[in-house]
Image (cartoon, rainbow, N blue to C red; front, top):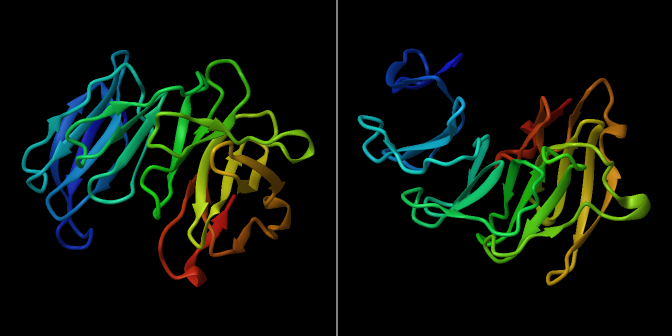
Length: 238
């Protein structure tokens, strides 16, 4: 919030809130509750790199678990133990956020978004914003982050050479993914395992009046989210 990292908790459905944590000169960009007592918040300390805080007692105390030079902007978990965080770098945890391991082989293109395969905790997609001076991209790992493959496509079915700001997996088919870019939203079909590739087509060209009931993704302000809820209640907003 502003120039301070702040965490508040509600126990009455949001009618009232109690501040639990405050840190000046920092900001949280993402937060996930893993259970009634466990939650993780990720963000950055201005001019000092990223930060990850974790609580295991419902927010009574928060402990910094991963200081880093990265600027953490997005986080996602497959279950209560397996999750990823990204922003400049990509880290993975297999113990509910107690410890984190830096991913290998990630291009220097500033990862800004993650999408985890709910059926395979070792498979994840990352959106690259192009912060290293190159084009944005979408990459995928099939082995828990040891190796990453570029699935931005080739030729006429390639993603536009522009920053990618979010990525999401279709909840009904993990081989269908969506990417939000600076020039629109695209739908990709992933093929192969050892050397995966992807063919992309524009997705936002069929959206009328800027809204569409689709049952595939939430896309808002360049960020994609794939909630597991009634498809009739899901919308894409651009």
